[in-house]
Length: 547
Image 1 (cartoon, helix red, strand yellow):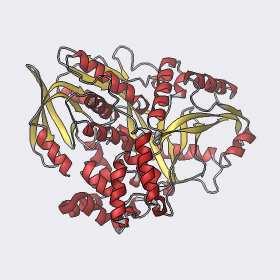
Image 2 (cartoon, helix red, strand yellow; image 1 turned 180 degrees about the vertical axis):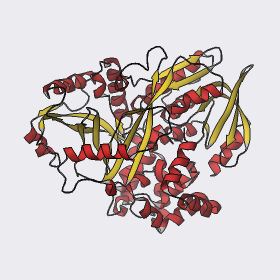
Image 3 (cartoon, one colour; image 1 turned 135 degrees about the vertical axis):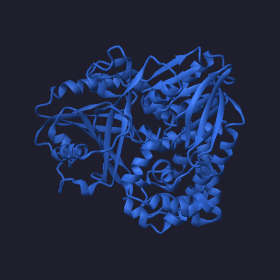
Image 4 (cartoon, helix red, strand yellow; image 1 turned 120 degrees about the horizontal axis):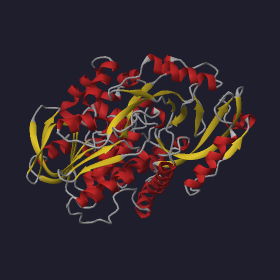
């Protein structure tokens, strides 16, 4: 908590070049890009970082092959190039994965049509990934025995990419990078109002944890509040060219259905695309694409039944999946950027997933609408260009602000790990060697963690039953990751609450010790906060705070 408290003191004391409101992927990338190039940045979020849309994605980093059907080839080309860039920049976190797509009888196209589309998709991505293949039903079954091919007429295999850890962790690493570059960031800080005065913006903010209010002064204001961009703009008296409409998506986390490391893709009864995605020891199934009027959503019985019914029709499971198999549910909205002139009247499923940045030069105000995690590096660079155009000095315009440390740092870490035989300490149930996992999650900071383990091997022990998270990782989270509530660690800095049943977490004898490490004297209060009430009550509370 000390990092957050220190930053809370700094927020009203300085005048920043830029204040970014919203710590999802757009805000985190914007803050990292600006501060990485030498701009003075503050970043706040009224909930936790990555606390809304950015923690409810499919964990896929893809060029959007389905957007080809609506003819949005420019977006597909751009997203494919962005995907390739992320794979090269984050080789430990963003990795190529094969998609196995099944076409059943009655589909709107012969399977050769989408197969031809995969070749175009591959070429639009500069042939960066492995090439696609057409598959007859027998070949589909041979590659993945759990697919029910009785109604299949063919299929194809192609490549995209996915996040090895979860989306929220990936987003937080941008926040962590921004902090390392000098950004003053704090979660659970709500923007109450903002007004433009001579020379800049004055934003009145409230510490959600204590209720204390204070002012943050900045020359430029960036609204990156995700689904709540329009709400915040109304609060600040800001008009924009774009606004949001919302698409609700849900995913169900169930026990691992197949040991193969590939994504299974199907078309639902209504023609919508949905996936079976590997998630460590679990499988993620989704998603829906349903228009809703507001960003506050939850998974309904109808949503859950839709996903279960469609997946049970397409997989040859020994026992059909039912609600008792669901370990966790992810439910959020995709904010889609539209213009008032006709944007709402088009086919909703064909609305573009492009991001849009509305710039008000006179008021030095930016609003970031829509977007996809795949496009995050482009968002960061575009924000820097826009801020520079407002007269803000960018001292290091060519500075690289993203990506894993270079190969020499990684080799130094792995050399030390080999010398101390770190991988011998890997838990028997772990999905990968300990050295790989620590490097992927923490990069250069993992070198310091090696010394901690060297001094005390207990630091390499798993603390919470059924997880792969160690004591040393909790110490790291306490010092450097601004964990304010237990849910922040369990759901966003890690994926514990996605892959471990809640009842198992609550019963874990290590949960109390985890709280003691994370929160010190406040451990009992934070543990009680997590344990009290039903999961549904906590979910509603997160919705009220998120964004």
